[in-house]
Image 1 (cartoon, rainbow, N blue to C red):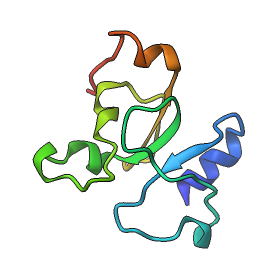
Image 2 (image 1 turned 30 degrees about the vertical axis):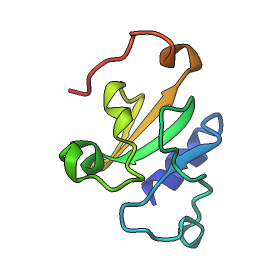
Image 3 (image 1 turned 135 degrees about the vertical axis):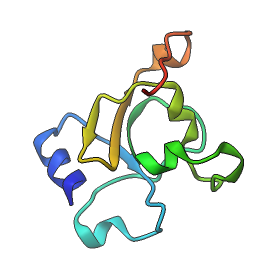
Amino acid sequence: IYLREWMEDHPEARPMSFESPLGYDHQLIGLKCIKAPHSPTPGWHAIKASQLMTDRSTVAPYNEHWLRDFTPVARIGYTIWVFHILPEQLQSDSRAEIP
């Protein structure tokens, strides 16, 4: 619900990718998100912080662990982090670690 409110307040953050670790349907709670990419992709991405903190050897195949190399532009509550990845960030070594 907080992600939906954040997206309403930030219409520039479209399209937004998000993959629920629980597999629930985003449409049921009013989220208009696209499926999260499996590899580094420019754009807006939301992810549960717990997915970023999971041991890389145990993550599910859809996990956006590649986002660990970038700094979030927003944190929604304590659980969801938002990233805005620009194309040039994927072509450079300007990635930052998440604190």
